Structures are given as C-alpha cells and as structure tokens.
Amino acid sequence: MRVFLDLMWFFKAEKKAYIIGILTLLFVAFLQLVPPRVIGMVVDEIERGSLTGDRLLMWVVVLILAGIGMYVLRYFWRIMIFGSSVKLAKILRNRLYQHFTKMSPNFYQKRRTGDLMAHATNDLQAIQQTAGVGVLTFVDSLATGGFVVIAMATTISWKLTLICLLPMPLMAILTGWYGGMLHKRFHKAQEAFSRLNDKSQESISGIKVIKTFGQEKEDIEDFDNLSKDVVKKNISVAKVDSLFDPTISIIVGISYFLSIVFGSRYVMAGEMTIGELVSFTTYLGLLIWPMLAFGHLFNIVERGRASLDRVNTLLNEKVEIQDREGAINTVPRGNLVYEIKKFAYPGEQENQLEHVQFTLPKGATLGIVGKTGAGKTSLLKLLIREFEGYEGDIRIGGKSIKDYQLDKLRESMGYVPQDHFLFSATVAENIAFADPNISREQIYEASRIAQIHDDILDFTDGYETVVGERGVSLSGGQKQRISIARAILLNPEILILDDSLSAVDAKTEEEILQALKENREGKTTLITAHRLSAIEHADLILVLDDGNIVERGTHEQLMSQDGWYKDMYLRQQLEELVELGG
Image (spheres, rainbow, N blue to C red):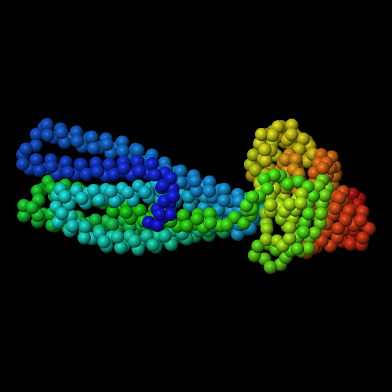
C-alpha cells in the first residue's frame, strides 16, 4: 500500500472531494446492512405467525428507501473519487510533458520515443486507476467488511462470527504473496509494452525507408515478435491475477461451511433463531465482495506502484541545462565571442571541439565549413545551450551565454537545423509556429525571403495546404525553405543555418542568401555548409577539422592559401562546370 503514501500529496490537495466520496461510501456500506437484517426479521415473524400486511408493507418501504439511498450515494462517490483520479492523470501528464520540454538532447539520446509515450499513456492510466478504483476498493472493502463483521458480531452471534473469520489470516498471507509477484511481472509487462510502442512509432515514421528497401516482411516479423513478448508478459501477469479469485472463493467457501455447521448447532441449541441464521448467511454473502475486492485491490495497487515508480524515475531525471540564480532577463545583443578550450559529448572520451577561438562582430556573417564530423553542428549546439560541460566560455555582448536566462538566449536566435521538422498542420501554421498571431503579410514576406512563396501558391490550397506528419508530402528543398521562413519570421538577433541549403539548387541558394543579406542588415548570421558557395560572401570563414580551426579568413584570404578550402572550392567549381557541360 506504499503507493497511497506516495500519492498523499495529491490526496491532500483533493481532500474535500475524497472526504465527501469516502463518507458517501461509508453511508452506502451502512445501508447495505439493512436488507439482510430486514430479511431475517421477516423470516422470524413468518415463523411466529405475526407477519401482517401492514408490517410487510413497512419492511418493503424500508428496503425501497435503502435501495434509493444507495443509488443516489453511489452516483456522488463516483463523481468525487473517479473525477479526482482523472485530475491526477492530468497533473502527472502535464508534469511529464513540461519535464520533457526542459530536458537536453542527451536525455532523448538515452530514451526511446515510444517508451516516453508509454509512460505518458499506459503508466498514467494505471496510476489513475490506483487513485480512483484503488481508493474505492480500499475504502469499500474495509468499510463494507468492517460494518458487516460488526453487525454479525453485535446483532447475531460473536462466537459464530469469530469461527467464520478463522480462515481470513490465510487469505491475507496468500494475497500478499501474490501482490509481490504481480508487482514484478507487471513492471516487465510495462517495459515490453514500451518496446512495442517504440517499434510502432519508429516503423510508422520510417515506413518509406522500409518500403524502399523491401523490408516489410522483416519489419512485420520484428513487430510480431515484440507483440508476442507483450502477450507473454501480460499472460504472466494474468496468471498471478487469476490466483486471487479462486483463493478468495475457497476461503469464503470454508467460511460458509463453518457458518452452516456451527450455526445449525446454535439454532438447535436455542442460541439463535432461524431468521438470525438466515441474516448471518446473508451478511456472509455481503463479505464476498470485500474479500474479492481486497484481492482486486492488490492487483490495482501493484500495477499502480510499478507505473508510478517508472514515471517518478523519469521525473527525477535532473535537468542538465538550467538558469543560474539571478540570470539576465534580457535578449542578448552584441559581438559573439567563442573561447572553447575543449568539449566532449556526455559519456564520450574523445573531444568534439578543441581550441575554438574567434570573435564575430554584431551584424557580421560567419561561415563554418569542414568535412563531415568536423564539429560544425557541435559548435552551433553549444551556442544555443543544447549541451554544456565544456572548458571555456561563449559570450554575447561581453556576457557569458550561461548568464542569460535560457528562454531569453534562445529568443535571440532563429535556428534551422539539419533535420527539418514540420508539424501536421497547414503551411502557414508551420511558418508561424513561434508566433501564431503574426499577420499573414509577414508570413508572405518571410516566405519570399526563403524563396518558397511561389512554391506554396502552387500547392492545392496554397498556405492552407496541410502538410503530412514531418512534412512527408513536401520535397527536401521545400521543407528546408519552409524551415528557413519559420526562422526568418522571428527576425532574430542571430540566425543559425545548419547546412540548411543543401537541398536547394545553386540559383535558389544564391537568391536566398542575397535576400537574407538585404533583409538582415545589422543582424548576425551563422551558416554551416558543405557547398562552399553558400558561405563565400561571409565576413569570416572557419574551416574545421577534427574539432580544430585549421583555416580562417575571408573567401579571398582563404583562396590565397593552398589549403583545404581552396582545394575544395576549386573542386566544387569544376564539378559544377562538368554538370553544366553535361
């Protein structure tokens, strides 16, 4: 029952609803005592020949009133207890989502998307059941069971009550053992469901790749194996769960046997009436539900505890990137200064960046080039504080980026990453993602700068065209340019284009760069690229190799050196000439 203690913070917050719900449950449990007692009294009056029509009508009215009372009260406790449990699921779901938005990329590298989704759905459902059905079952089983036992002992025979309760300790021992087994097996079942969920998400997202390589059969087999594992793990849970009802039924059967044997002897000895024995066995019938409910309670509680442990493990993951105390609450502006001695990704020994030092004046354009894996994207990720743990500092306007509030730092930046993500929404909504209330004319202007406006007008519904999930209905170049328009719309102090022109042709690239130059006067721009024509206009160009700056300067300065930049530029120019000639 530790899970109830773990959820005490919520029960205290919703104490009014739970108190009202529990009180109504207690009234229901009390009213349930009326019918068995009335039946016993009627039986005794029949035996004595004293039952009249008026007396029978009176007892019928009492039974009807008790029934109506239970009906109304059951309606209210359901609203109070089940309604509160839905609130708990909402609170935990919001906490999880907010926690996810604060986590760094390192968190998502360690966690699978499907697993995170399973925590936010399946696990929360199990916790909600604990706070709803679990509380109901706990209170109802104790209240009904307690009231029934008290009524049997005080109004009929305490000796017969004690005899019938003798098998109960055995039930407590067995159900406790089953509960421990259930907790372990349900935890494994939830993990199996997470793996299946992750597989489903991954396969649906990569369905085009799967079909292209003709791997449908293999993917279906993988899914089938994971699905079988989920079934296997849940059957394992069901095997333990199925032990509760037979065990309780046997215990109840023994209690019934004891009540008939010893109750008959008490009637024959004159210590009880036949009506009292009928009432006693009817009361004993009422004990069946609390006993079964108690076994069901272990099932609910252990499932809830396993799921709560999984959710708390996620929520207890430390947020790596946090604001310092007294962080600056203004958008950073000014010169950009990098002084990175070394940086390695979490858990890796090899440095990704070493001795990266440069100054970029406000309003200038920086070009970053180098071979794949040279550290270009890593350099940008440090600027937007996706990662920390490096030796050195990065400053904007003379102040460390760590001194600014994280939201203010990122407010100053428009970032277009290599892996463009578009939402399942209209084109206009995707472009205006950062500011849904922005005017349509501003959306058009950003689209014109990104050279995507004319393409959008050719879509079926223009700017109201709904793109598929992750933009699957668009070409790579269209997705890139919509992402660029989304960043431009913010008019950021620093625009970051991380190899964001790779899918457009040279002419479109030139038009985009020229439009950016005209519209971003006085604003800083950082561009990484493999095609050197994208950065030859830059005020400063850095050539990275294994995380080190091996060349730096303007296009003209680098072309005057016999280095990697000149060699690669001439090679790309030659390739372009060959393509034109072809």
